Length: 135
Image (cartoon, rainbow, N blue to C red; front, side):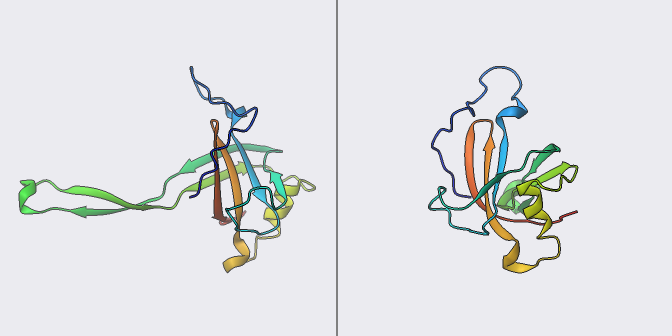
């Protein structure tokens, strides 16, 4: 996952107490671009209207090993992560981000690839994503 580390006004990191959801934002590039070199290209739509929850998960792959030197204990190494954001809410027809996702419901392969810009408590993360499990 490539990272864009340029600060974005209004997304400052919370330094005390609980992180506020209001500083977390998710944008999708509705042009199907996967170019991570230039964030100024594309058409970005904010996925927010009627969205009530965005739940991140790492979806890790691990390798477990046990050898004689472990004296009966094994070890686990995380070998990859397929980071996922599960988005929950109500469908709002006419919202650019939701309309874009809806057009992908029956798509397969490269047609499901685009870019996402996720502001996670002040850190801007730009990544190529695959839209999946569209309901």
